[in-house]
Image (tube, rainbow, N blue to C red):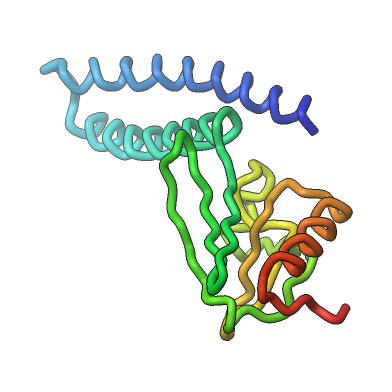
Amino acid sequence: QWGVQYFITLFLGLWLCGWAVGVVFVATQFLSDDMPSEVFLFGAVWLVAWMGGGAFALLICCWSLAGKERILLGSDRIALKREIFGWGRTREYELVHVRSLRASQSPYNPADFRSGFRFWGIGGGSIAFDHGSKTIRFAAGLDEAEAQSLVARLVDRGNIAASAT
């Protein structure tokens, strides 16, 4: 798995170099006075899409270099944080509402945009629990045995109900 991650990081790093050349080329064309209006519209649409692709590639590259997923278990809540270089969003859940903590691989759903992020190691997770009417997934990148071990540790340390299955 590490070999694939390093390959993706190297590939995206090289791709970002080509991406930067494209941005510079189109930006210099925008700054010139001789650009026809029909080319300007196409260039503007292309540049917006190109910037979105570059932002996504940069996110994946940064995640593979410095991304971390933190699981913080307190006496009354569990906090899940995905961060890159210390920046990220924390989601907190009260333990009294956490049910059926379990090792559970995320099913792939082609209709769900977030399913595609799992290939890059960002979305989903090998551990799930029910919170209200939602299923919360975390611990991306763990295999089944690692996920089961982490579930056992979380159940031992906190007031969390594990799944009976």
